[in-house]
Image (cartoon, rainbow, N blue to C red; front, side, top):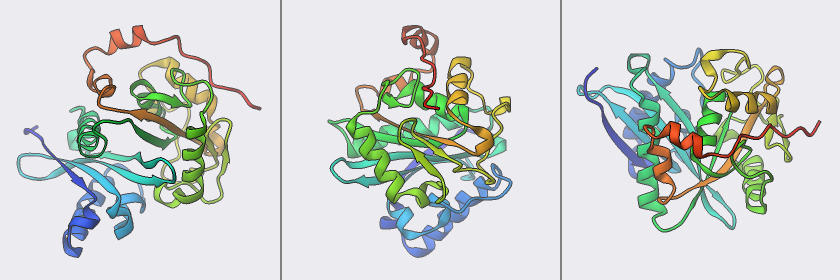
Length: 267
């Protein structure tokens, strides 16, 4: 595989003309088509100007300029808290699998965003998924996260305000089913991915996290037969960012973490 180059685009809907935006979306959808049996139309993949105006996208290209992967986040305004960075959507072409491209794309996007938009303060982040590996990675690398076996045991007032804002205003942008029920105790959107391209089998090892404890935590939290997905809310800053990029120190980092908790049971 040739050497990869990376580019981070801030709010392309504000910076690019109509044709340039259309060309960008066409490239993104071509990669996404290799990752889904049916390409979803949400976030930057929708091509809607409003979504592109709040998108932050990291592109990964080979030496020939071919797009092989992207990470697309959304800066979501939340009253009283400024922008919350929703980690959203990452797709990697099968030709680039095994290059750790997901991590490279996400880390470069985060670093650029923090330097440009949040140099001297923490940034609140969100993630919404039913993919156990995605939920587990966010749990390992971000601070004050809920729900997480390593994060806070109960959501703070700010966690709740951000979650409520996402529930009320950003369902379409995040592809949360309009009929899904939000459980404010567990931060689970019940029935959100039922019958969609995002739905996963709880026992499909391809989507499990390498850390069994993390996999089990989110398996216990979600009802996969019901099509549930979890909303994670936490923080990141330039002071905590090295935790995200310290892949070689992963074993030591895990050893320093507290023993993971079991998922809360509110049944």
